[in-house]
Image 1 (cartoon, rainbow, N blue to C red):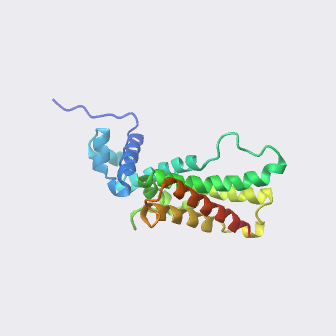
Image 2 (image 1 turned 90 degrees about the horizontal axis):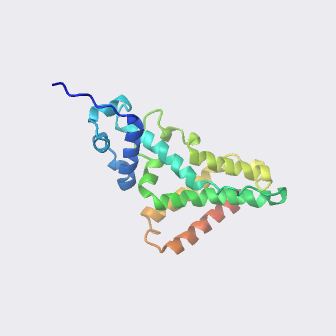
Image 3 (image 1 turned 30 degrees about the vertical axis):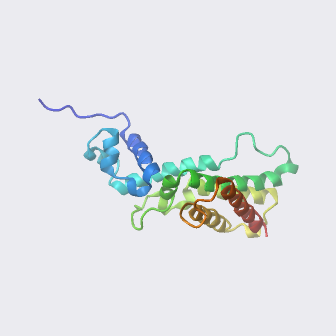
Length: 208
């Protein structure tokens, strides 16, 4: 008797979910098509209907991780400026929230953080989110926060072009130091204080 072919309602989404589980546990190196399909319950060949190879799946997982990171970087609901007189402080608070949210996500989810922007060299396909960081949700949130500071009058428009890059470098560098470097193992309260100091320095720095 011929075996009935397996049909999955949304195999692509299921494989991305499996990829999220694997990379959350072990970073990008833990992701493999064979293991992802095993978790979903289909044959490895089934994955090729949706992903050309393992790197294509990694790119889809990275895009989803970026969305999760952006959620962590968002301002709480109802935190918009109540009046024009508060706009400057709200603009600064938005940049602080973005910066601390980035660091906190990295510390809470180091496996996903390793996937979000920087895979192994040469492993990113041309249409991967790794190739166009300017379209990534976390990067867009940073850009929007800086633009809001300009609109609020707390950031000189002449200082705005390119300001996202030193900001991103600072929070990413801090996260790497905290996960892999000399800040690793510090008590949570001390690490939080240092993260806040780093982000405060970013806000001050872009305004000078």
